[in-house]
Length: 101
Image (cartoon, rainbow, N blue to C red; front, top):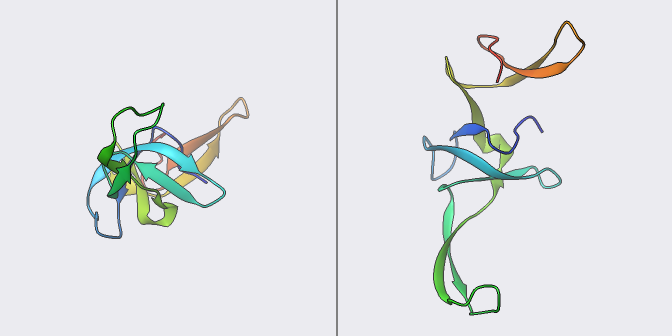
């Protein structure tokens, strides 16, 4: 997967289309990402030792990685490409403008 934890992304499909957020968690086996504040569902939880407060909580649910696009600081939503440095180090770059992501 070309999207990593901490990346800024824009939602390009689904009910939250157009919203932007930061990737909180990546699930590579399922090709899904969790974006902060996006695709939020209500979950009814019981009080446990970990969570002493029960009730209805808002939880960010995973969405498919094809529904998000990386945000380039210069040109907005873009695809991710790779380039090799002079040292032979691989880095992620913007497919539109070539800026490092």
